[in-house]
Image 1 (cartoon, rainbow, N blue to C red):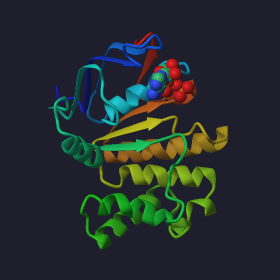
Image 2: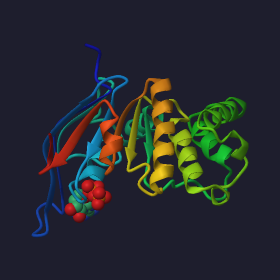
Image 3: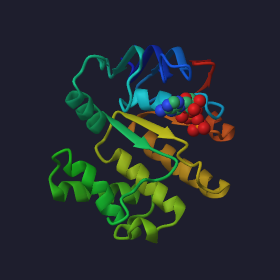
Amino acid sequence: MSEAVLDLRRIEKSYLRGTPGEVTVLTGLDLSVAPGEVVALVAPSGAGKSTLLHIAGLLDSADAGTVAISGREMTGLSDRARTAVRREDVGFVYQFHHLLPEFSALENIVLPQLANAVPQTEAAARARKLLDAVGIAPRADHRPAELSGGEQQRVAFCRALANAPKLLLADEPTGNLDPATAEQVFGTLMELVRDTGLSALIATHNLELAARLDRVVRLANGRLS
Ligand SMILES: Nc1ncnc2c1ncn2[C@@H]1O[C@H](COP(=O)(O)OP(=O)(O)OP(=O)(O)O)[C@@H](O)[C@H]1O
């Protein structure tokens, strides 16, 4: 069997540890995502889905347990090494696009590549290709405020994939869109993910969309089922 792209073992996480207000969120959670596998994460509000995505994407640390990305153990890596893995191997999409308002769609996809030392011309060519793949190449020079909600989210997908990550983590990526737009944008995201052979963990409240992915995991009481 080929190596998991994401492997979480016995993850534990509490907030405000050691205080009377301690909130226990994850209690020995295990999750493995195979190469090319797209997993839906379904959870009631407050169950810890964002916490789980942040730990998987190295934005936050677990109190206990191990995180491995493409077979490489992340625990014990320096902050600098974790940042490099996050920048090169992981793409994030959030419910709200978080695009930089003063930059065009194209520039928003070019910038993370420049941060990864990709030459400008190459970065722009890749950005155009991605915008074309999500059907909005003619909007390349628009700023986020000049794009529709669905278009903004398509640009956010392109930005997440700009550095050709191995793993895509998405937190309610269509949660801010009306149902018809969400459906279209989700379809585009899935095409992009399938075309690139990427592994993905996609949190969604939409059970119909979740059911279309390879596997659905449910988070409750700190663990997955
Ligand atoms: N920094 C923090 N300090 C204290 N408690 C926190 C912190 N962040 C999150 N929590 C608590 O941890 C629990 C899980 O939060 P998390 O944001 O992971 O939930 P979620 O499943 O993503 O929720 P939603 O779907 O509503 O966004 C919640 O009860 C939340 O109140």
